[in-house]
Length: 288
Image 1 (cartoon, rainbow, N blue to C red):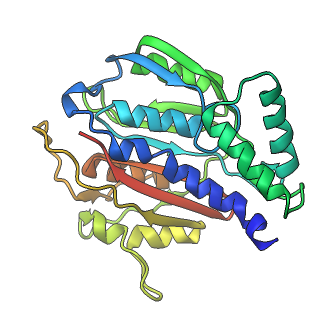
Image 2 (image 1 turned 135 degrees about the horizontal axis):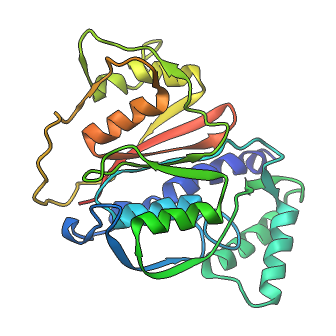
């Protein structure tokens, strides 16, 4: 039973990493990526998901955006609770069999059906599997980034989006409309005025953690470091802010503000996911 009890969390982490896989391997040049919210994407297809059954989710939408833009896209997923926010094995099989009966199983759902049928031979149908996320299908031709974001949050209205950057250098943040896990205050640090990102996010060694890592840990958020390979070379745009450092000397900062300052300075996207009491934060560079 131990494997099935843990599968919900393991699949959730796998979904977080899987939804980033295309962004890690995409060879699209910086010149072909959207630079502003008014730039147009020729074709968008969100029809299935890395984790959820029967369509794409907000994770898949964020991953698709990251594949197509030249600026950070941050995602804070809603906080799931076990077991109420998870699909059980019986529910998953019933849904997949219903979809199969009308011939609407995609390739990923076919793989899920086979996996869950094998799992059902050894585990109870009440065991939880994956978060009960909203799913949708979105196919569009010639749509701006701004209009695409508006479409996505109409399809999953648990979320909202905002531009925490500028018109010239956007930083898109997709976050829950209510009950964010990142609204807690962070005290300003003014000595030194600028802090190295490596110092702020240093991994814990024994009882010692990086300054921001420690604060995250107090709120049950762990930083997962992802190696995504070298970023393809391109001619970077001029940026007056020094990379690798964040200005933490500001009043009224929330945890999300610090994450966004890290994203702006280092050109990193971030994703926060996981279950209540065990959240995971991942960073990876914007493709160029």
